[in-house]
Amino acid sequence: MNSFRPGKFHRDRIPRSIQRFSPTSALSSLQNVDLDDLKAAGKKLILIDVDNTLLPWRAEEIPPDTLEWVNRAKELGFDICILSNTRNPERLTRISGKMGLDFIRAKFKPSTEMYLLALDKYDHSPSHAVMIGDQLLTDIWGANRTGIDAIWVKPIGKREFIGTRVISRKIEWVVGRFLYRYFQADGADAEQRPGFFGRQVVRQFVKFGVVGVLSTVVDWGLHRVLLFVVPGLQEKVGNAVMNTFQPGAQHTAEAIYDAAYGPLKIGPVLLAIFVSYTLNRLFTFDLEDRSASTKQAAQFYAVALIGMVIAVTVSTIVNHLAKGSVESQFWKGSFFGLVAGFLWNFNVQRLWTFKQKG
Image 1 (cartoon, rainbow, N blue to C red):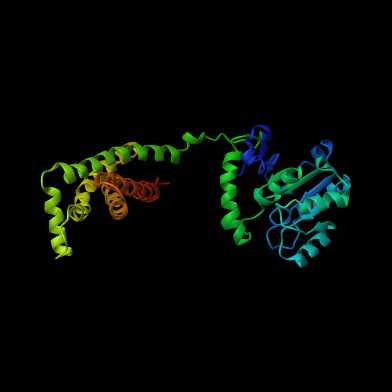
Image 2: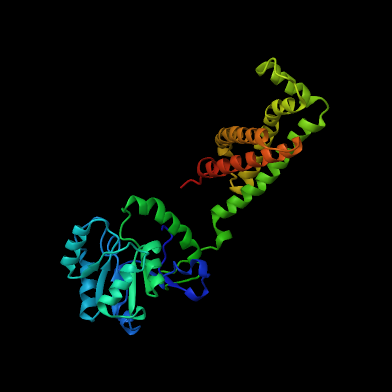
């Protein structure tokens, strides 16, 4: 994960629901695992993952510092065993032979099978073993299920099995965000990181939401006035739309309302875009350089107009499909249109229109 930080986790404080994924510590590399500390803690058996822990994924050349660490662990009297989910046992055999280590392949981690086989093979209890690996969802979880302490190391490289990269790492990122709430960074590697609401993107999201609420008041309020307050406007617009696009259709009250809903949404949305641009420029993204306002206004309106199409389309579809009174349909359609338009607008405006230079 991109926010990997070395240090220790306060496992006793972590909620049980995610404690199963928590290592005792996170380290920048295998070489940062202090063998003397492990020995002092009574550890006798080191269980270790292969890919992105001992060496890069699919590689067979052993990094010199990895080999040096393994040899020192042997000198200190540790039993060492590789536990791997690899689908290439021939490669695993070659790697373990080069390092002079045994390996166990059985039911894939996080199953406890490999861990229990290793404990039985070397005749050690779980308290005397430690697992070292780069994945929370396999190496660390499997160790915790077996009662073995686990050390999480930063992956050596970015290349890995597509399933790991696309699925496991995404879940790991989410789990890691929770685990790091119960974390003490190492002194040399400690980094002062803002709390959740101290992050710029979070502050911008909240401000964007506040502006969105104000813009929505303009949008929904004016839209409602046009639909339900201005005498005869709904009927006039609805009939005109039906006569143009649905000639011969029966002009029921519901059909007229449906036909008028979309066209009467356009004006309020355009006004709301203007309010949103002005407030987001000066409040959300703190931009005061007037020389850039023309270009940014054009970008903002381009993005917002697409957002308008998304919002109007979603709200119109939901309004048409929703059950209940026309008032109920109105609020349901407006809500879902708002959510769709908001997500589009925030992400594209932040990453394109108001992207900070430099």
